[in-house]
Image 1 (cartoon, rainbow, N blue to C red):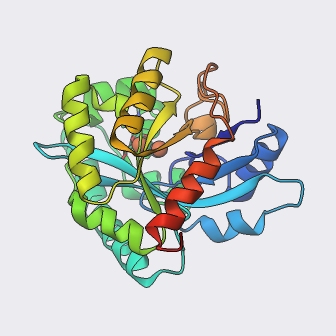
Image 2 (tube, helix red, strand yellow):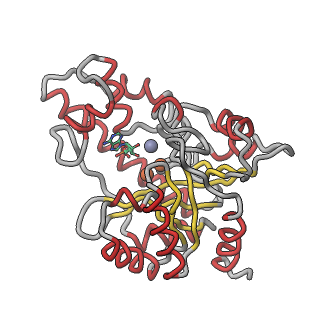
Length: 287
Ligand code: AMP
Ligand code: ZN
Ligand code: FE
Ligand code: FE
């Protein structure tokens, strides 16, 4: 079966491969298509798209943003085939960068108050010029020997409710979905399984998001088990939503997750591309 992977991260956010290395890795893995979907950033897309080769894979420019989840917390949504030149998208992402720039020093301050000496320079170094996020703080805590691994860093300090957690402002669903759509990005709910909702509650939430512009759901995902995958494919069929899939590959930052196959069992069929493209053509009013 020919495979695709429509959810990956590069050094432009918290992945370890540069955008061109990512394109090369996807070619090596024999994928028919790969999407770059950095958190809150399209800074990697120009380099990514310039790595296109006649030998494939098809390169899909994307982005992953957080939306305010009704009732608290966040939802992740991918925009597939966004136009990185779209001025509204650029402005929206610039706002998210400012939100991060205000939040990161507060995280550092909380850690310092807990007696853990960290500086913004240290996390910025770890991010290597890409945007700084909690994963970089987690890595710094590992490097300093404060915790054994990143998982413990999140569990003990950085997760919501943790002593170093600082919330950040997000788009509300209608605004975030409209931003992606306006830039030509097909909005797909990322990793619905991680929301840990019962099927009926998930269906209700997805229905609400669909009314606000959602076009698809990521049924295939590293951490979805086969039963969950089937349930999500069924949900998409019932609600008439497109089906997508991707690993959430981050390279060495999340070494268990492999490009194209996730934790080992994920297989996203290349046949999904056609449905996603048709859906996008309809969204853009060209079909
Ligand atoms: P940020 O956007 O700075 O809030 O960081 C969010 C990112 O942190 C997510 O996309 C994940 O990659 C990572 N993350 C969040 N929670 C955890 C966790 N419990 N363990 C490991 N990584 C996490
Ligand atoms: Zn990430
Ligand atoms: Fe995500
Ligand atoms: Fe992701």
